[in-house]
Image 1 (cartoon, rainbow, N blue to C red):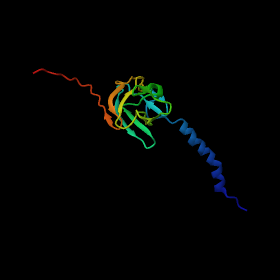
Image 2: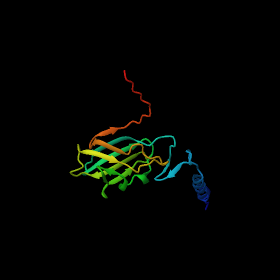
Image 3: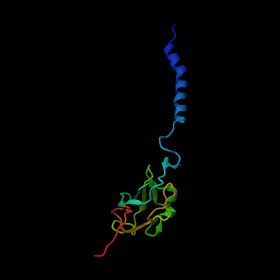
Length: 168
């Protein structure tokens, strides 16, 4: 009886190729510079030239008796500086049943708070992020946001232009 030579050689060489594949993955380098990277839920690099500020705040009611507050930043935020004890909604820290989620890029945070008599659509909303920092340790430019209402969207644009007022 004749042995099946091609199948036998495949089984002998397969572990070698698997080893080559996994060892090459170990030595692969990231395309980005890893000098200023922070390994937190993926690798995020800091931007040393930019200010850190909020670009958008949006709030809406979810179907499961929660209010969703979405805050978008211009550069990735450090999640270690945005915890329940350091985020204040209407001058109160977040309760234990609230939830905080970050997107993969780190520039968006979603906060879910329970809807109650104080947190309903149309009610006043005030957000304070006193300890918020970016990944390269830049403190947030403006941490307190007042005169907002739940159920609306607010956009913020940072302008560093020099404005000159003249009397006629």
